[in-house]
Length: 315
Image 1 (cartoon, one colour):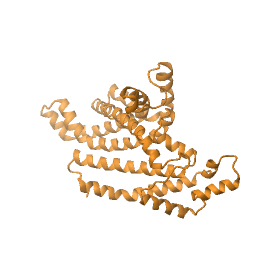
Image 2 (cartoon, rainbow, N blue to C red; image 1 turned 120 degrees about the vertical axis):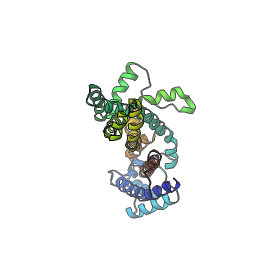
Image 3 (cartoon, rainbow, N blue to C red; image 1 turned 90 degrees about the vertical axis):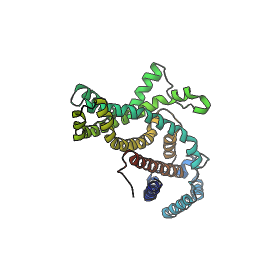
Image 4 (cartoon, helix red, strand yellow; image 1 turned 45 degrees about the vertical axis):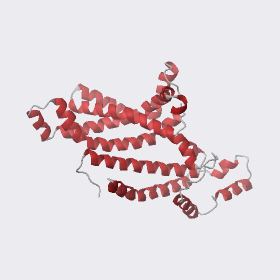
């Protein structure tokens, strides 16, 4: 197992390097000058140029890239240009919000999405299958920001069940307010993932339920619950694990929109603030950390593969 983890982490280094280079290049392709943003609209050209020199933005791109990599090699992600704190500090303050949102969304997505997919596969061709697939189609088709706006109007403004915005820290405010501040954005964030997971689970289950060993189990008089639940779902689990890893990555990536709509002080909102302010170190650092998180998720999925199906090995 340790060898598997080590191999996967070593294989991920080129991916992280590519993410770092692409994030650096993309940030410098953005229109606008961070020195102008920092200096303000009324600043003189001399003041803007002085800030650009202080930040090293007047250096050639390749020298800025080498300098960034040199700092990364020392574990330094740089300091934000507008937040007056280091990138790691800014991310560390907001990480619990994004992780809480992703964890709650995943806890909603997995049982509902898998259950809908299994039910649809078992009753394939029936009205139940059609209804589940219709729900899944709506989930993957409707934009998250539109659902978020409707949800706020219904559950916050009209019914007053949950707050429309803001985050209540778990340790400071307690489990109730924390759950109340996250349940609505988590459900909005889960809607697309539930539809996606239901469709993938249904497809995997249909492939398994058509296999000979399923027919053999039924011919031997094995109960439907045991046939579908143990023999069917267990063999479809590898595909479900694959999709679950993708879903977790999408949940973290999708938090950018949901955190902005619900004013949650997470990493997604931090990225938006960094882009608007042309805060190069902040954006580059958060994108690299996002890439590292996705790599860890894929390594975790590979480890689960080996537990679910011992035939799978990574050499």
